Image (cartoon, rainbow, N blue to C red; front, side, top):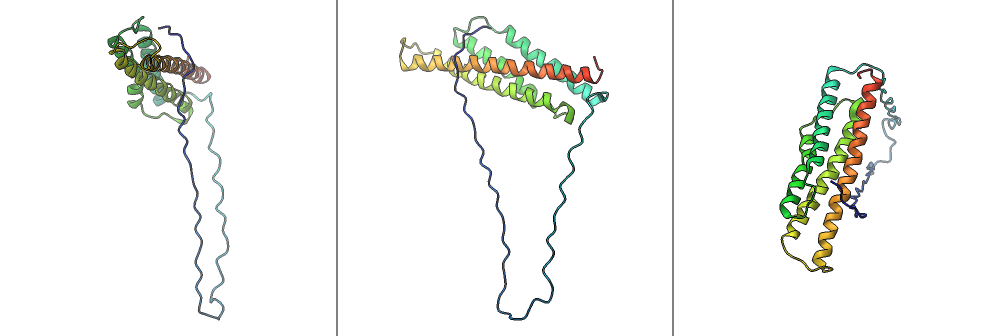
Length: 195
């Protein structure tokens, strides 16, 4: 489905993290020295770095099963995008497109997290689904706006244009990231001699 795109604003959620430190209390009222010396300051040794996974190590049965599921699911998503209506000029067609885009998120929800070696594929897959979900939301909004005739250049017309642009931009980004995930899956299989 080819749709001309314009830049779409993306809302970035910032998470502020704070750290708190506690201070000990002192007791007064006694002139005599403490009966025991203060405990020596101890340092907790740093945890050893995570052991890297040899990319040439053969894939486990669990890893093969997960990658097979991912490959099948990602193909279903891309097939769904290709099978969508060529023209999305009616609310019904726009809702149809939105429903197809949500396939990725539903598939991700049914997918368990894989081993460390496969996490890059999972992370890219999750990011792609986020883009598709946002695109679906914009498509549904556009479908509702399309139900009411609007005048060219009106505020409603501009809102409709913005939501269609959002839908198109998020589809493009999601498709790019999903392609990256598929390439990463292939690279992992190739390095492990599974192809």
